Length: 395
Ligand SMILES: NC(=O)c1ccc[n+]([C@@H]2O[C@H](COP(=O)([O-])OP(=O)(O)OC[C@H]3O[C@@H](n4cnc5c(N)ncnc54)[C@H](O)[C@@H]3O)[C@@H](O)[C@H]2O)c1
Image (cartoon, rainbow, N blue to C red; front, side, top):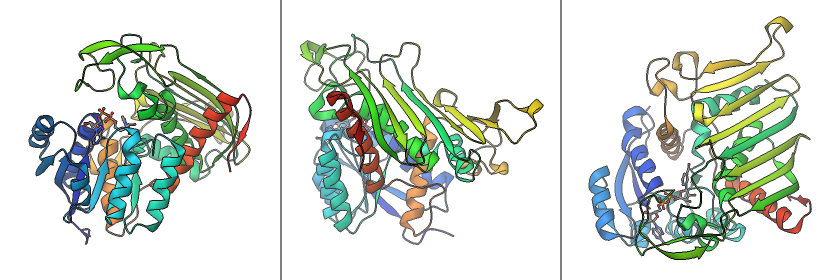
């Protein structure tokens, strides 16, 4: 049944890495998920007038400008999509909520716990709904893991081992906003651990209730400063640089915690894990079996099932691309074994957002601001544990 509230007019703030990923999602969602409804690409706002105009033309946004507030409060806009650095999430999301808009915000919810709390408070009084781009939930293999674990595949959970490993943050990478503590909040931690904390909470359905120890470390303490207006996505390769400036975030954070069901969990995030580029990976071990995933092989989920006879036991690799076999989201895409990529998780999420705005249910649970705040509490507790050298209970 077509979505009754459609079309949804979207205003996007931010036009670089996530700006492109989200534009692709809004552009394609109605084509692959026609029942979810239609998104209208109403306005994009970003800081550089010339760039944002070119961006709008390239991606099909009807309007472009440098005034995000005007875009976020425009009477014609229904949904505001926040794809900017972490220190402005709160201001932009709260302004949109106060104008009665629905808001979908990038992760981590904010750079600080206080900003994240203000966002949750604004969401409670605002009339709009909130969503957070924890996009990996909607990678079919991850959604399948969620479904299998929620259906009891693992039984009681004993261990979680999660790591998000990248290697673009070497000494030649300039002082992008991602290395500025007042903008990003933290480094690899808020950027990468945020995703795997969310994944563990999503798949197990359990909360991380205590941090028992953590290490935070900055290997590269100084980086080349960027010339005004220079940018570049993530690594900033080729950007104009000036002098040197201090990096005020971690390059790597590791921590151990306890799950609400009694299991033990370890988390590791690094931008200096030579050999890995986007290894968002986790293993979960329970009394009846285990699952493991690595985003560098994103169309596969590995399962170990103790129900099989002993002589058949071993890791099974499932090619999670078969809509006919019920693999999440795959019916909307291609025939079996025509694999998906990074961008599809965002399109799948856009479909669930439109479905929810039309009164329907998402295929798998969607994080709102309150849910993402729980992940933010874990991020914050891990840093407190690292800095104070002690265990931290999460209320
Ligand atoms: N979900 C994911 O997988 C994923 C991946 C990368 C980044 N992110 C998150 O997305 C957000 C944006 O990251 P990115 O990689 O797209 O950054 P980016 O540097 O590539 O782009 C940032 C954009 O925000 C704009 N901007 C910056 N400050 C602004 C301000 N004050 N007002 C208006 N616009 C402003 C810039 O002009 C630019 O268009 C961050 O919160 C980041 O953590 C999420």
